[in-house]
Image (cartoon, rainbow, N blue to C red; front, side, top):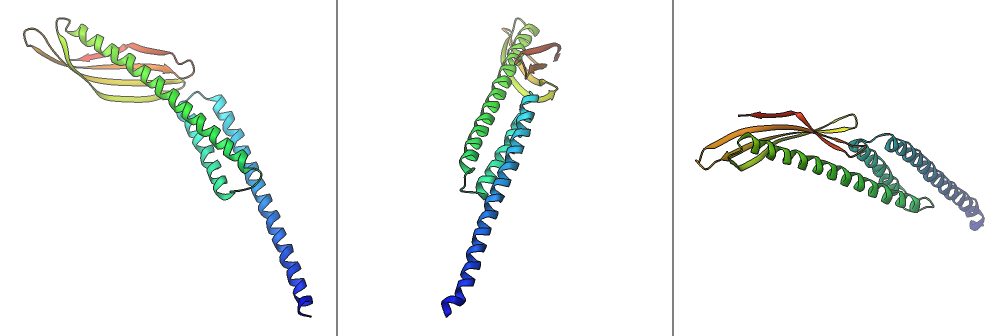
Length: 191
């Protein structure tokens, strides 16, 4: 008799368990579908911009969403795909950051080289004792990364005369073409 009374309870429990399982699966699928939409939208952003900071932020957004998805759904049919996507977006972000660093370093080296040349031309019978970067500002103007550097220069000559002055130089790097140009009209020396 007791078994017959328990049968409806067991049946109801099993039905609830199956319903919860289906709900969690549909929730996982719904979350993954939303994640796919986010990835597609961010892929469009990546294709239509050359700005490194925007690309890095886009990667960060997708990486965060993928990590959140994986923390909420640790198993299921979309987990392996999400893990693969996460690795891909992390790799893409690292590549963009490396590209940005390389371009920034190339631009800085070109500006540094010009600062040395300008300093040597300022007092051509002297040699540079020190040249210190005192200010480095990087901004973005459209597709251009603009770098403004200020240097303190100390020079001396055979007569032990010491010259101190500042050199200000601005350069640009095109983020699309990776070309670098120094704005020679912006070169300024303050003695």
